[in-house]
Length: 339
Image (tube, rainbow, N blue to C red):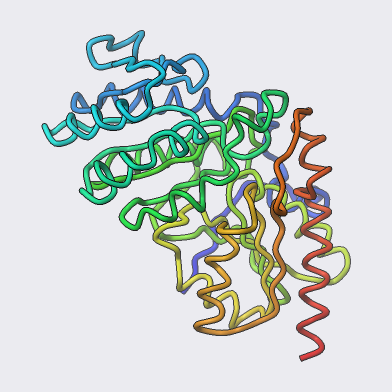
């Protein structure tokens, strides 16, 4: 049975903002939240150490450097060495957090991640910061838009994509407690709130159902979860009741929740801040095809690199908004009706 997560809202606002009604606006970049959460786990667990690729000010891993300088190692702009040192520390019983940008770690140190971390099934945690396109003006060279696909090619690595500040805090705790390799995506910007500050249930491998519905299921991760909830509110005005799943874990996927969505709603839309090729949607589609084929539509980046601009401008231009999810959901529901 899929459990629905209760989210604070007031009756009059539910139609306008869906399940996010009543939550305060986001004010803190997700990377700052990561830094705070990392310091918290380091404070409570002396085995936690942090390895930095000379980006501690950008990833906010520097919070640990200020509090526990003896447990913070700046390896410099040398991602391959960064991963190798972390693997050695993990082999000695420490819990290393490898911190850098997704684009740098995955493109420069993939061989080391594959051999020293994934293939060895070592107890290391990997922060892939600046994921997606919302880092904006920093430009495409630093945007991690291939990270789901690349980490997806490392079979033993758990993949976590929190959707807001509360989920990030819970994800850092869950990743640290998990025994084995974990990759965690972070963002440069503040993400719209989905959960109350202290109210995000987070179990690795179990999606959170944020809204029930019988007509279509919106499956999203990261920043697209808030967009899916907003889209569900718009669809409700049209008489389309959408279920919304926060798929915060991309490996292991919650097969039960995905199959239930296909069986019970008969149509699925996936939404992700990532390339469609090799992304979350392709893995959800594989499960749907195996268990219960239904009409599907996919919201994500087409085969393209983006440019430098404000985050909201990029989301609109590359069709990663609530309106785009609404359009996809309408199409999926129409396709369901024709079957």
